[in-house]
Image (tube, rainbow, N blue to C red):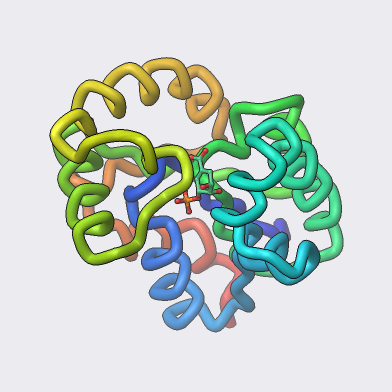
Length: 174
Ligand code: S3P
């Protein structure tokens, strides 16, 4: 059995939420690469990017993906990780990748709500919330070729996400 599942997708699509629900229903262990990175760096990602810049962060993120070869279960991955270095190939070699997809309207709205609630993402910090649809539209288009390298794609606006996720693991759960 494949025992390592990487949940990838754009910021705000709900990777952490679905990872938690999937882990609970499948009883598989759960990991969050951003959280693991923060604990290794002893710093929040927001703080790390503000201090050292995005490229330094991408290097650290790459190392975290390589380290994840020792983890088992469901792994939620930061939105940009698949789009740098050969991270997508590494994840495809180390486990099964699942791309959670949503359209620009859905993502912009989710990100707007999250920013208004005080959870500001480093990549959006200099951007007015009214500009999110333009930003997300362009950014998602740039990232799609990487996301599309995933072994599976789930459109979160169209299907029962938990059921789709469980169908990937059900054959292995006793
Ligand atoms: C990023 C997404 C974030 C985090 C960092 C960069 C990105 O994770 O890794 O802020 O480049 O899309 P989430 O997708 O969990 O927000």
